[in-house]
Image 1: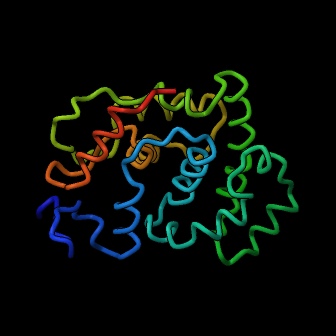
Image 2: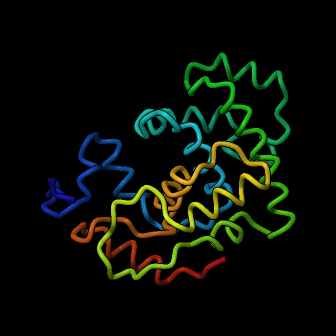
Image 3: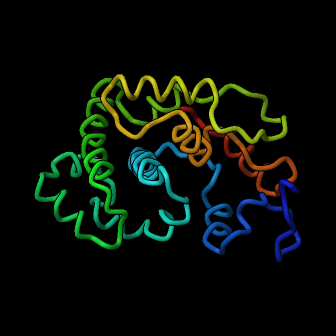
Length: 201
């Protein structure tokens, strides 16, 4: 199976994104572009946790509902959620109603506050685990890497939940900490350029 396909515009794109229009838009506008905004990083790590055992499409189509339910993923607000909020969210058909994942998100918001105290920003903390690899190499279809394992281990030690190595590698891919656009994908160069010009936190 080819790692790319030719889009309607005549340019090569990563093959995985042709499955749905939502994936196309996500791939075109977000996936693999470096993110240093703390709120976006927190949102993504939470949504990756909700995805566990599900497809990313399930989460992507509900993303606006998740944002509404979790105070736009402002972790300082989510950290204040109570048992009443958990029950409210369990009744919200617009999100994934999984009690463990809801509680994990609230817990992780509290842990994010602790990371902020120690490192000054979530971005500074997460980007310390940026995988070291040659940007010119072809993307490898990996599920984990040494750094995602290390990040997962460190987060768990700090009390975070639903942050396994595979989940953390998907987080790294999405947040542009690695450039896993296929070698012939037209957006690989854009990701490479954005990463090259990024001032690391």
